[in-house]
Length: 407
Image (cartoon, rainbow, N blue to C red; front, side):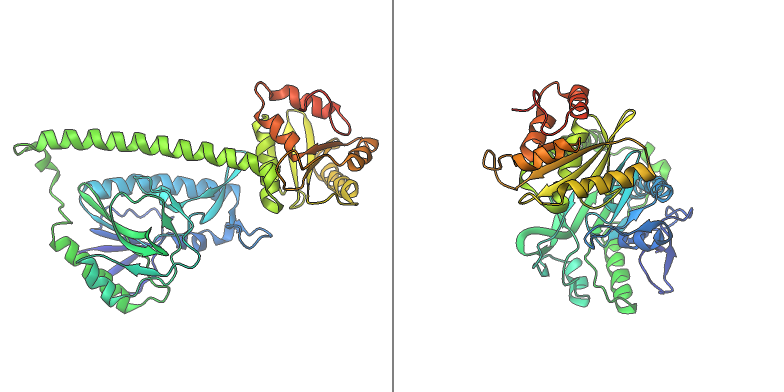
């Protein structure tokens, strides 16, 4: 059996190391062991880390393009690999492994998007120790190799046989998935690896192949059908189409709920969450938003030939709110464009109407020619029907708290 290690670090003579970004194909192998977390190191020369340690590394525009091209190429290879009845073992990575540039936006990158089947993952329980509950041949592997003590990701819904759990029995962090005629195995491998782990993985692959998992028939055999095979293949294709359609609907529904929560954070969030909600609100109004361009409490907003700089003020009104806004405006004018409208978005993180309006701050901003919005104001504007460009026109023309466009 020929085994490729895709990002999985090994010096075992029976396992060939293959870089995810290389042009080398995996189709010449019988099995692949993939550690997606290695992608961070593969692109280390082209990423930057944010000020917040919790932020995933951000790839440059060029590196983002290269990674996404590699993902599309490997996805096609993985699909063909599974169609030939071969085996892929994956060490599940954290949900947002990297951040990548996509046109005008920055988005989290989930490495499992390289697989032909969508498998949504989320953060695992913070205190969930990984435990194995399953049968052979995986039990023999689990008895030889302890699982990662803390999972890096949890599967929101696992379509196969769950094997590894964290926190509670229903939180799946690893398992086995039969993707006819191929096989996917998700193993939370230990951090400390070496020959013992490699030997256990090879033994597991041998057992799976011996059990018929590696059923790699020649291409010409597809022309010879046994009784019931055509009907079974037609049913399988129909079910896979339904599964893909349902996955698309689930992802679209999750996306809409995420957008709704992101908008609500403009009245309920604080810190980076509040700033992200401001960005999402202006995007809902049709603008292009560049968060954290000037500082971690502001967003730069582009609307055609016009520009805005919005500063987030959460909690009680701060005495230096006007000065902070003008500092961000000066930076923007010095580095990007000579003219920009200043906006302060103020939220106390309380449900309306108790958030109220800070009349003194609004008056100070009006005197300086800037705009004052509460979080409730911005939520209303971003979700109102037929808001669009007319709202941005009125914000641009206003000083203080805009009249005529607010509840």
